[in-house]
Length: 344
Ligand SMILES: [Zn+2]
Image (cartoon, rainbow, N blue to C red; front, top):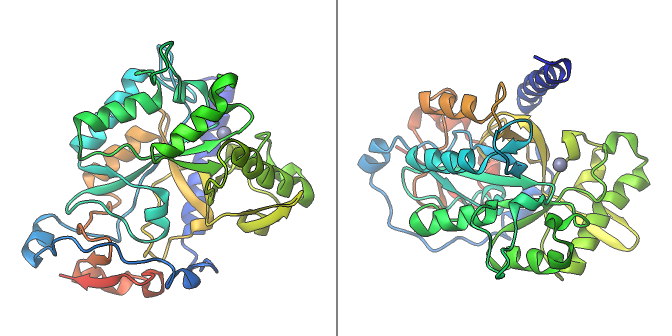
């Protein structure tokens, strides 16, 4: 193992350890209470019987993997690169093991609309890299970029919708400069979410408060120049490094542009707690790195398959949070945000 690789692994282990520690704190996000009235109930699907909840082992206190991708290209998966073939394998494995893509908004609103027995997963793509979104010469979406692979997979598997969040660097814009505006607009039209990943992708810890605000507001301003009015309500920290003053991540203003983030996404290294878990802290949401490293995608997919930790298994009704009776006392009822609690 090379020294740099070793340092990276050690850093990841450190992130994991510190995350478990920080997630153990029962920190309340200040904006959650005010959401209760703002989030409407979605139309109710067929209510599941106790027998079917039990058969599906429904548990909405389980963890949700938020997968973190960078490049989808190359002939070998290494570093931040996942090959097209490995990415397709990831989708096939997720599908075979009962996962169902959801939006970040569903997760933060505690309105997860996964069918009965399915486990939510959130796909994220950082840096607006070219391999994530390319047009072919005829203007169609390249079948080998992440967007093409996801949308093609969803066509063949209608019970695995193409949902993902793109944490963008608006100036790089998926490396086809002349197509930058069209790409951003098309992503939004296709129902993908756009998140803040700053302008320059520098460590926020080395900046003054004013510089941090400029980076966060600047990403919103530049992205909205491409897609007017686009909603950007979460941020992924460049390299997972936050500013000294973490309050700046929640909201701020620079050069006349305001920003507000309901969630802050980290780099690595474990699945996210359920929105109703005492360990949930939207301002420090961990992700699973979708690469082959210790505590990467394979480690966590294997662990979740074994049931350690328990994964989120949906009751099929976004308006209801269902947990086994034995776990009822663990549900943080203030985080139901208007959803009903059900036990079986
Ligand atoms: Zn990045």
